[in-house]
Length: 427
Image 1 (cartoon, rainbow, N blue to C red):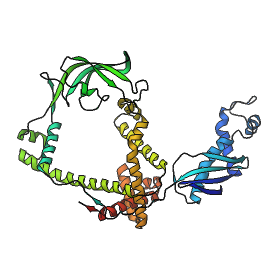
Image 2 (cartoon, helix red, strand yellow; image 1 turned 180 degrees about the vertical axis):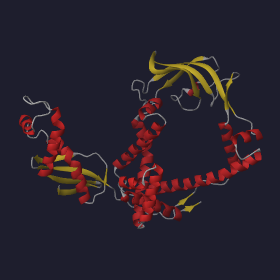
Image 3 (cartoon, rainbow, N blue to C red; image 1 turned 45 degrees about the vertical axis):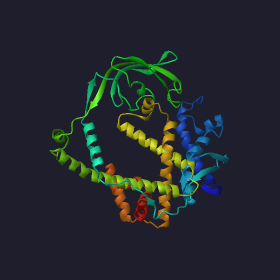
């Protein structure tokens, strides 16, 4: 591999002209031939047994060139990036072949480079954090949550449906008078106000009584996954079979003994809740401080950031989401069908958060550079050990998978955030 030229063509774009030598190219051609020959039929030869020279004579000497170039170019680009000490951002790569022959090939490739950013005013940032004071109101709120968790659903016959009730319904959807697939359900338990159904559906259940049969008129969201329903008006025929209300237990000593292992009376339980709240509110305040400092740093960072960095972060977030869904027995496609979402809509929803996360990372990396933050070997090893413990893997295995330089960057970023927090003015 030889770098024949390198030009900066935009703020975060470089173009490399790279030559691959004949020996490397010929080796790739031979590899491609061996991969593909099993599928090649040449008269006079058994399938998969035709010599390369015969194949090239019949189809042309260049028959394997394109696949061979595809085989070789990633490593050639990686070598060139390392030689020029470039830090690149994963992005779409377009190759422009300058010349090619059996003696090698030359190509141009445009790469997106890591942005240069600046940041000022990262010390002494002023923020107002949420209070961690334990108040009577907060104690009562926590007790109400416990009562709701211990509540039960009971059938109601003396009133109409209200918000937070569970309505047991049959329903069938119609568009232009025709029933559509997936729009029917029987004895379905719908929590009113949960947002489980199409916008407007649940609101129209409110006020109806057990036994009522009625129409619900809705319009599907424009981004609904089923194209023929997207943006379309629809009518659902609904029958209300049963109304269930959530009944909360009375706050007394008996309730306390049911929900707590340590308290016997209401007063003891309030003291227990207060103690737990104290710890929870401290954590909440710390999280709030971190989040507000993160937002402040994301706003302070200056520089032209490639769109690919934001897009890549959104992709990572979608992968994380899919992994969580699979742990619940779902996949992303099924989730989108249930919710009427599309990947484009999900990407749009994640876009703002992804942008903040990318800017925050760039800000902290720059702060670490300015402050000469250089993690020690001990700190790096501690981070490796945390990962090994988290994923229940052998330490050396983790080290073989993740480059130490990446871990050092993560540790440096953490230390930079600590510096920002230590100098912040928190009210």
